[in-house]
Length: 489
Image (cartoon, rainbow, N blue to C red):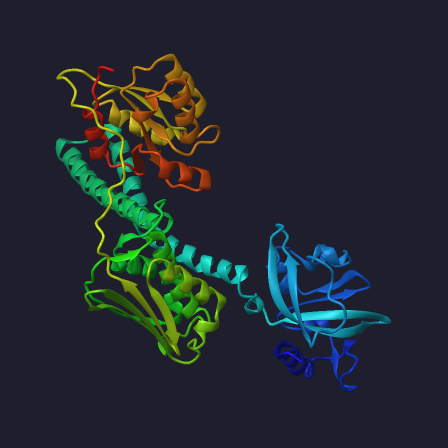
């Protein structure tokens, strides 16, 4: 019998009288409500019992929503038939329709006079490797990211609140010149701190784009920067499981795909941390060393020390997948006991600049360019329109469809700032429609993006020379771009 079955035998030996468990000693009986962990019972094709813990994990308020229903309400596929060496690999159906893969002990029982099958697992650790494990790792990453965002969000919000109250005081009037000066001085300080918060948030977003960069292929990548970002994203797991000991030397750029390497760093850290229990940071140390042993290679050495440190990473399917990805850009990933070694090739290639929209000669003095702003988010549009109006005459439309209509009606826009992702028709659709109907006008489009999510959009950006500006947009860069466009077409 598998280890879960053995564990269940040990647990049931001390439980009070309830449902008999055939095959065991006469005194071994079971009251299902006292069984710890996750459990459920199937009998005559229906769900006879579900533990409160399992029901809650599946998204139900009480087990009553499942008890009495057909087995298909809980199991994806047919129920296992008979005993499977005391172990069953199950796909359980969550309330939201998602599937959770769980390993459970499987035991034959009798409910009154009806035969049934009891399935039991100790709890959430029973989830199988693969998608469920990745989901739990994603939780760790998002928690770490939330922590990183919350600090600048906190002082940004507090200082904006102070500014709102200060402006309200000034608006009410009745203050002496000295009081007005003091409020203005405090407001200026609060505004500076708020600006630092927005700068910090913008830096985090820029770093995160390294993990979803559209660019394909291999190029020069800074491994130290990606490692430091990986520590931020895994901070939630790290702080509860191990002490982080870093020795990061200055190294050359390496040949890699930036998004792939960033994902590998995060995946390796979470894979090493996976078996470590929360609350045991004092007993474990995660040692990470980045160095360049010779002119041709850079090494990242990850070692976990302490009880329960993983020693068989090389046999993990996810580790094998990472090895293949590292090999694809000329690197090597190995594991020996509790140490993982990632060896990367030093880059000898030059940075290849991304093709950008052609910038025409400067404007004649005193002439303002015409700009079409295509942005569906009202607050973003208002802020951009206010900024752009310093240098240009701006027309704003809120959808891709309106943009196409405007460009077919009037071609005299020097610049088209177009949001890439919009609900009805996105920037890709605008570009294609204008290219077919007014060839050449599409070259004036500069895309604004907060992130690229669809494969179609990724493929489009790879093939097009048009410039893309990441949100939040740098005001100075945007104004410089406006000043560079000429009025006569």
